[in-house]
Length: 472
Image (cartoon, rainbow, N blue to C red):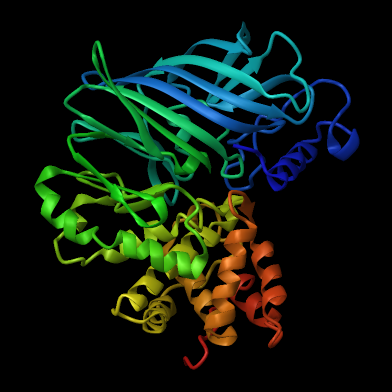
């Protein structure tokens, strides 16, 4: 998978912000150690500078009895400066056994949750390099204020991974920031009586001496926070969806009947959303509705996660399925450039679920927006949508306010222009990252009926909650 010019320029900005040199475009002429973090103000200790990630290949074995994983991570990177050293995120409780750079042994050091690598030779600017890291350990979730426990977690007799915002580093070495997207191949060998699902399509399932190896491949590109692996006792079914998209669902066998009904309209959702947002950006989608997930629901890339208890055979929680699917356009394909831009993912996905409700003959988006406004009116208005704060990235008020703002745009612009705006947004930013100013800057380029600057400022950059048009 190629690396977009926007991602490259964003990474150059990280390098320049780190004060790593004074050469052309901030790139120094002499070799240097890459910045050890992304400098994101919300989670400044995570991510890396000095390079882009092109591909992760993970080959892991999982021991159910002791909860340990062991294996290798091959990370293909593209330095944008001559590098004499670089860093990856990896939890301190994971033990690195060896590191190779382009096949040659490298020196390394683990400090806290960082893996610092000293290659045997200077990495050349603009030349792909492969890091091969052998490691082992018992992954443990980390607690994130305002979010809860994230990362690799035991679920029943298996595993559930929810990585947002900074949980990927708990189970593999990575540059753990949403702006550093890559293609993935994830192989996990697990006991043969367990099933493994992960991002992308299943491309191989092979017996091993001590279990079964499941290999999933996803060209992405995908942010680390959207990676997932689920291991347990469940059934996986696949079918053909619209336009060659594979539909892939996972659920406990005792929920098979409810799953068939509750998840049965994902193909229709794909068709509906493609008409509203543009073509589906990937080649597979489905839902893993599993018992004991650490969260109620989460839109991992190509795989929506939800609690098995939400399947009731009545489609009572179909909005969760729709929200996870909308996330594939908003958050997965168009990823946030920094964590302060999280509403570009959560609010758009929420509004997508309102649109599905409307298109499927249930409550209209307008009625859902007005109900959300009533809820917001009873809550403190102590944050700004464009910069809510690290502890509020999953605050329901962020997604509800953002969704109401989108509905306000729709009411002002009219359906034709509003949905054109969404399609242009998804097309222009597909497979890359975006920030709030990109969206507010796009609005006047698509809609010229009136100046919406004051309206956008009130909703996005000010704390007081405005009114919906026609809403007092």
